[in-house]
Image (tube, rainbow, N blue to C red; front, top):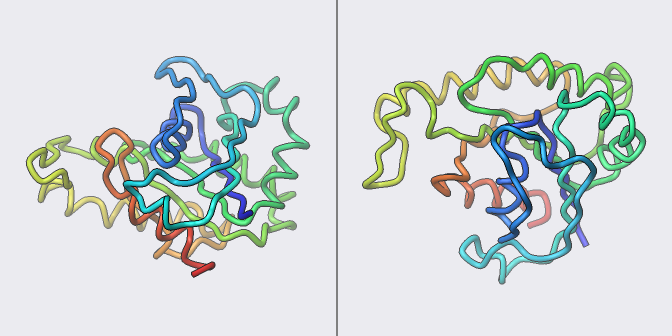
Length: 197
């Protein structure tokens, strides 16, 4: 069974993304970090994302980086093991922020300052893409507005610039998505499976 781990800052939408991809109902809260240890699930992606035609996965939803030093220290060995043993890592960031230093520092911790790079298939999910300025999502077609479509390539380039010195993420594996709008999830699922097709 293939293994998938979801990492990122608290509030980036990691657990919401897991819920949307696998049809789960794990607790989320916009103000409180609900993931205090690594949640695990074995099963298929939801049928609307062709989950019934794809193999089962073992999912690991990790505590948000930078949320709590106590949580980080208590889970550190398990986080390290997960980071270096899974087949696919999806690192989730928020589309409407440039504050990525916490992510960078967490990656340095997990890679022993860049000395131990995981062999996993690496994906960067830019979540909450519907909140990109000027927040005028095309509700009729459920796609970014023309103004947002002009900005999204810059978001992808910036994310690649900020993350590629720390992890070998290809720009083609940076996926804009929205769990709220269920946008971009099909492309994310395809990218997760891409190395195994």
